[in-house]
Image 1 (cartoon, rainbow, N blue to C red):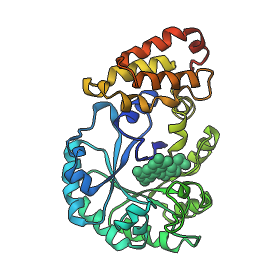
Image 2: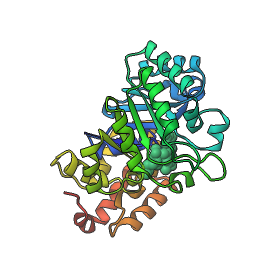
Image 3: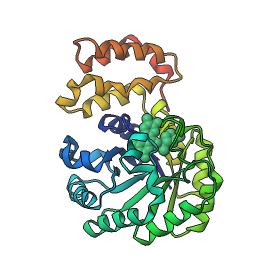
Image 4: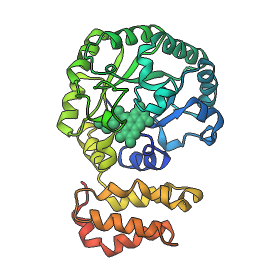
Length: 321
Ligand SMILES: Cc1cc2nc3c(=O)[nH]c(=O)nc-3n(C[C@H](O)[C@H](O)[C@H](O)COP(=O)(O)O)c2cc1C
């Protein structure tokens, strides 16, 4: 029974992962998508997985076998727990680069990447993909894709339960316009009983998660967690039977204590993902304004404590327990 934080560019960075791990000790974390070129040449190469981040999956995107091999060497030293290949991103920039969702149609090449990575490391390799391309709901291509890539050693698939439309609609619309087809993910699960199939897309309700976990090996959740990180306290209580209770104040204090000196000074990034912590409570707007003002002032991040002093009475009402 597994719950995964979906990889989200601009969101699942080290700051958001830190926050999520504090609220949810049991969720499996993902990085943002990282292209093989940016891992090889960019600053992320120096990143070392923090002790508290485990289990943490790195998501790579690319279309060059040798670069995947080079990345595997880097990733093994960084301490990631799984390497995930992005075969689902519909963005025009990504598709122009010849990777992401368009690779559903090139299973033999993807199988070669899987094989090459597995020859270098014992770290498990997985794939995140969609049900298909365009408006065709036939599962022929995705079945062929899973068959060929699983034969090369991939045994775990995260399936965003909709197609990717590569022409005519934006990346954002690609996350809502093609209809969700959970029943087709179920068909894949029945067809490939020996592999792990994790379901993703539009999952927002705790009872729905419970039900899905009766059928699937795991569920992956993205926007619901970003838009309301405290939803994870429900996931902890109900799915993982975790009886720990904590307040948002506790979470924020712990978060600040886990920032290193450089991160604490990087206020804009460090505070950005805290915005939705009070979502759905009376303090929501006040909190967002407070964060905005703090970022744009010369106050230190520790001054967040003043918010709690000023709003102590209201805060008690939103304790999550
Ligand atoms: C802002 C944003 C960025 C995303 N970036 C990635 C990414 O880097 N890699 C990826 O595989 N999917 C990415 N996705 C898709 C999510 O991982 C997920 O498949 C999608 O949002 C559906 O799940 P949800 O309905 O639970 O959000 C992104 C989604 C959002 C909203």
